[in-house]
Image (cartoon, rainbow, N blue to C red; front, top):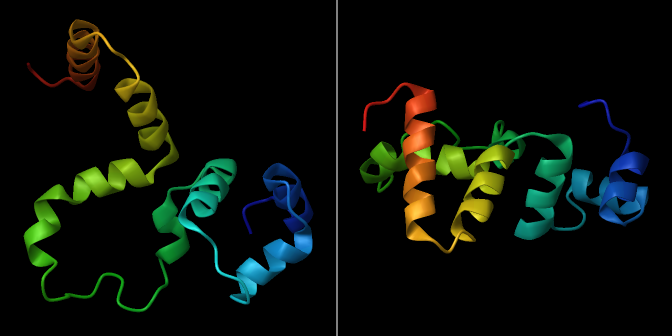
Length: 112
C-alpha cells in the first residue's frame, strides 16, 4: 500500500514478515512503541493507522473540551513532530531552547 513489502518492513523492524501479517490481520497486537517505529519507517503519522477506525471523526462526549489542543496531538503524532520534540527536550540550555523557538516562529512567519 505504501510501497514497502511486508518483508522489507519486517527487516527494518527486525521481525519476520509473518509477524507483520499477524499485525495487519489483527491476530497479534502492536505495542505503542512498535507502532511509532512502524510509522517512522513508513513516514506517516500514527493517525494514519486509525483513519478508518470506528468512531473516528464522530462527536464523542467528553472530547469536545480537548479540541483546542488537537494541534498538539497532530504534531506529536507526526514523525517529524516526535523527532523534533525528542531532540528539543535533550537541549539543556534554556537560552538555546528559547532561541530555537524564536527561530521556528520566524521561519513560520509568526511574530514573537
